[in-house]
Length: 246
Image 1 (cartoon, one colour):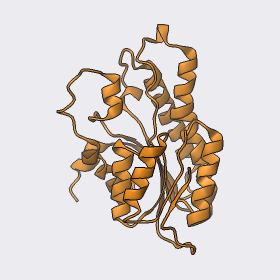
Image 2 (image 1 turned 45 degrees about the vertical axis):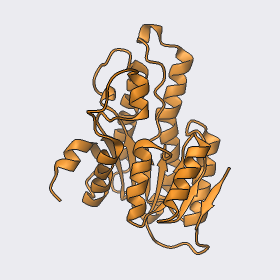
Image 3 (image 1 turned 90 degrees about the vertical axis):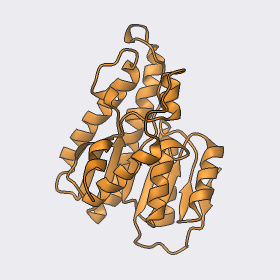
């Protein structure tokens, strides 16, 4: 199912953001804030029905192109970027938000096929999408790649080894990519949103009361703030970004 909603035939210079994992949670909240600021949106997520609902909602505020699929599927990634470029002509911001939690198991018992799936979704997929949008960004000498990480990529939490390893790898790949892109006009950010009350967190810790944690809508403004600050490439925590006075 392809969704092209309210897209003008003529391309314009408005900012274009491509967001993965955009059907719910943090990805959807970021998309809502970007849409409210007039940014044109390319969206993807695994759940076709939820993505359709999100695209329908957001199309009331901006131009939207949505393609359901798995970022671990490189054919899907290529189709997605081709579709966004065909509609809008360029991509200014890539937000690699989609993630796969994987089994909550100790590494000694972690299924290696599951680890491969987590790495494909959380590391290879974001890198594949970055490579696909980079030619457009380099030509324009402007662009932002935002990779959403987790403190599990820095801290050693038992049973979080698969997910944490994938995020640690994503962070290092982001640092290398930033170094390789120095002087190109393209910035690479890694953003740790902090603990949130989300479906993924509830899946990781079933039965645990997460009601005291902030929801994605509280955290999403940090991503807007980061783009407004035009900071140099680096790692950022959402809480610190939100603490900075406007």
